Length: 172
Image 1 (spheres, one colour):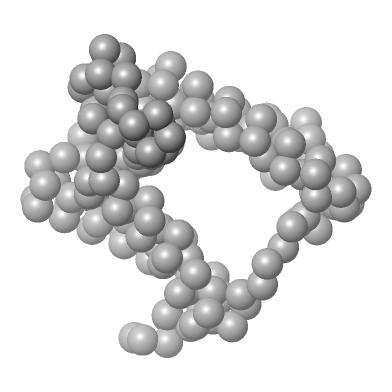
Image 2 (image 1 turned 90 degrees about the vertical axis):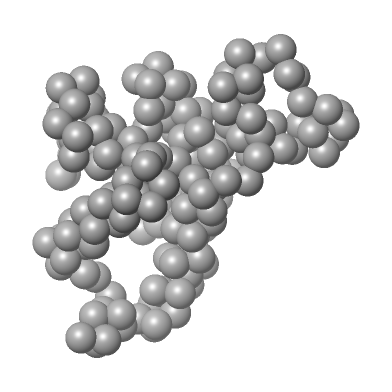
């Protein structure tokens, strides 16, 4: 059973079942769905507090979601730490500035890769705010609650991702 921790890739069925169990535990222990996008805005608010000494307390979003380290913020940190531990256990850890697939299509300039990654991150952030939640919020938590909005959003996310992959790389 522990051999699975050293696998380079996990079966999507095992990973899906694990995410489902995590979703149940989140509802059971915190009475909240899994979600990550709010953590990014909270982190921005924490940085703002550090540099300006205060938070924009009139911002309606900060009134609803105060900049603080909460369980969702810890979930995001856990994703990064878990990915690191998983890559170390499987023996495939390495720092890659430009992935091979990107380099074949656009070249191996790390600055170009960084700029495109930032643009993509900003667009995803706007999309998450516009849709009222991120991919994990709608795709995992919303669909497990049979939310029609989340099911439609998840279908549109997959369609958008497939279309983007076809346009940019010509592959699925």
